Image 1: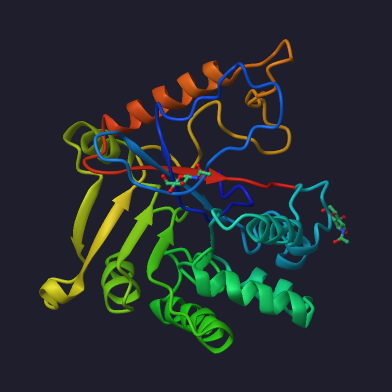
Image 2: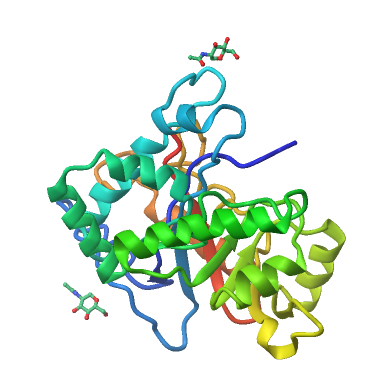
Length: 298
Ligand SMILES: *[C@@H]1O[C@H](CO)[C@@H](O)[C@H](O)[C@H]1NC(C)=O
Ligand SMILES: *[C@@H]1O[C@H](CO)[C@@H](O)[C@H](O)[C@H]1NC(C)=O
C-alpha cells in the first residue's frame, strides 16, 4: 500500500504570475515582496503549505515524532514543527496549516512558556491554522464511525481548550476512498466550510478533469438535505506539488538559483516551469488553482 509520505505544511499566499521576475541587473541581496494579494485579470496561484504527518504508518507515532528508527523511514516531525514555527516567526507573510494533533500535542508539551506565547500569536493572527484537527487524518472506510467522532472530538477539544479555535476545513488528502459520513457528519454538521481530498477512482478523476467537476457541493445525506452539503475540492492530481517543484531531502527538483553571478542562474527557466504548471492546472479547475506544497521531510 502506498501510503502517506510524512511531512507537510500549511501556508496560503498568492503569487502573481508574470509579476516580479528578478532583474538580472541586481547583483546584491534581492528582497522579494511576498505580500499576499489578489491581482484581477491574472491567474492567482495559491500555494498551500500543509502538514501531512502520518500518525504511525511504517513506524510508531513516537518514532515518527522523535525521528527514531530512521532506517525504516526518514521522518522526524519535531523537526518539521521546529523549522515551520521559526519560519513563520521570521516573516509574517508566511502561513502554514497544521493537521495532526497527536504530533502537535507532543511538540507543544516541550515548548517554553515564551515560545508558547509566540505560537499563540501565530494562531491568533492566522499565520498558523489548524485544519482537520483530529488526532490524525482518519481513514474513512475501515473504522467505525464512533471512532471517527471520538478522535476528531479529542483533537478539536484540545484546539479549543488550548487556542480557543475551531477548525473550519476538512483535509482528508490521503484516505483511500471517502464516505458520506465524512461529508455530512464530520464535515457539514461539524461546521466545516469545506472538505479537500486527493484520492479518488482513476476513472472518476479522468471524467472530472475532462468535465471540470473537481469542485462540487457534496450532499452527504439524502434525508438531511441541504444542511448536509459541503463544498468539496478534489485535487487534480495527487497531493504532491507539480513535477519539478518537490524540494524534500533527496528530491531531484532543480533548486531556484537566483544569484546572477552563478553559472547555473535559472530564475527565468524556473518561473517558466511554474507558469506552465499553473496553466496546466487551471486547464481542469473551474475557479481556483491550488498548488499543494508538501515540505520538510527530514
Ligand atoms: C508589496 O506588495 C504589496 C501588495 O501589492 C504592496 O502594498 C506593498 O507596498 C509592497 N511592498 C513593497 C516593499 O514594495
Ligand atoms: C527499529 O526497527 C528495527 C527493524 O524493524 C527493529 O529491529 C528495532 O528494534 C527498532 N528499534 C527501535 C528502537 O524501535
